[in-house]
Image 1 (spheres, rainbow, N blue to C red):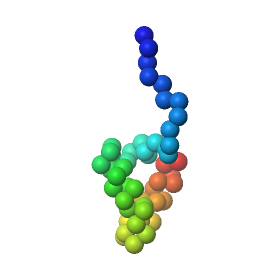
Image 2 (tube, helix red, strand yellow):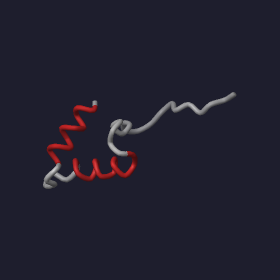
Image 3 (tube, rainbow, N blue to C red):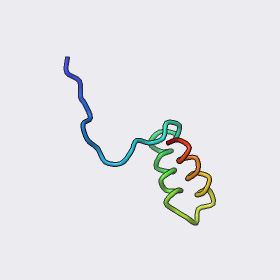
Length: 50
């Protein structure tokens, strides 16, 4: 059997507990908006995820 293999990519994978694609989109929106009230919290959480 042949299986697909990822050999290259751009960026990193979403954090494990981010909440799927919708959660990852929200996470990116918040951490890229320095004026968002949850920015510091989400950025800190993202750093803890690795």
